[in-house]
View 1 (cartoon, one colour):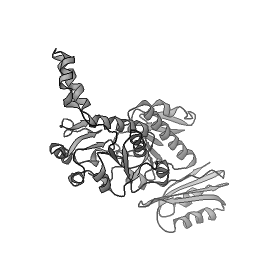
View 2 (cartoon, one colour; view 1 turned 120 degrees about the vertical axis):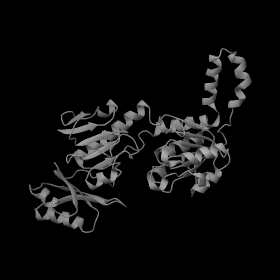
View 3 (cartoon, helix red, strand yellow; view 1 turned 90 degrees about the vertical axis):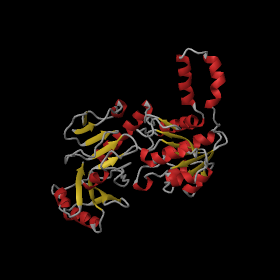
Length: 389
């Protein structure tokens, strides 16, 4: 039986299709074959040799030691797009919140009501302090056109906004999802120069650390409104607060409040609600479980962040799955070991990750001799071998 450990509360819907005769799920399993996690920190966790994979029920994987997992042959999955609808809806809400001082107005109404004044009269007298522009006819710049960014761009266009999109790493699938009405920005400066609103939807990497800082803000329109529901570290807190004080930025909406931003004037701090809908949590859990099962049972890798996409239909009775270093001559050595055991290769696939040190090979065969696994493990550079029936 395969054992799955959960590190957070996972939506029960994720396990509805799980074969209970083959899988057990527990929050305290000490030696799991797979781990299902949301936001629990894992960098200090020790992993046993049984661990095959980790699935993050969400898109971000900063809480997981990606490099260490790759080097030990542990696949790390995420669930891109599963929470895209939820995040897109909160971006749309953030557009409105950043335009008019809705949150401030609501707080003011509660205050005057608690003081026993004539609420109706006071509201009519003071409402002008909370007014703001319509989004219709304004320009939105979308940085990152993945699942969330593309949905956001289309939704904003349907509200009558002109939309610029920027993504230098746009995939073919993502490009197919984009309407021709979305204007292509060839660089970030185009986004900065043309946008009344800017929303960020990129992963947090070394290259995107403090993507929005004082230099970027200086290139933006006066009174720009910035939305960050992606990662806290994409925006410099100090620079954004300074820009708000200088009236360069009219409003900053963040889903990642901290001691600096939570009480800052001009900042709307949302308590990390981007994917906090029951539908999103169910979608993420279901996708994560499917990824775990397909890898454990078939060796297929879909939506891994530390391994390439590998999907091979089963053609033989046995399947040999090898994680190895991405170095020359590995395929020849692995297939040589298979041939030396008198095994005929019926189908195979190999893929390496650009910029990473690991690769993955899957071989289908009609039968496998008992010594094959040890023969492949003996090859210098092999990290993990699994033989599936």
